[in-house]
Length: 92
Image 1 (tube, helix red, strand yellow):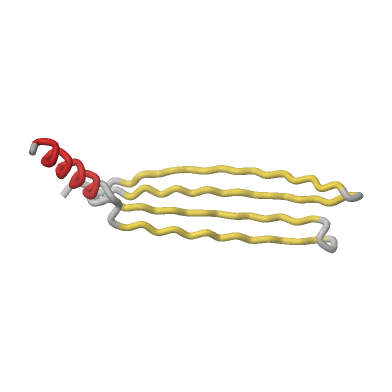
Image 2 (spheres, one colour; image 1 turned 90 degrees about the vertical axis):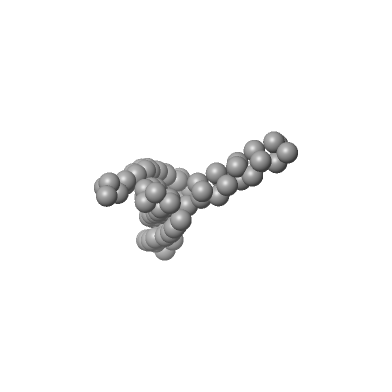
């Protein structure tokens, strides 16, 4: 009987830790020049999650990709950055 009670408590705890609200957005821009020989892609992804305590965690990822074609060779450069922030509501 004890293992069943412990299992039920663990299941209740796991459900209580699930996010209450979650949103996600992605914005991507591609620019092509010189008849497709040069291309730039800029992508930003944002994910926000709010838990049952009102704490909001926001993850932002930004990626820039540059591609050049010259004499049949392709050169690609990628830059990535990311940040995470957590906002806690004021006590009431």
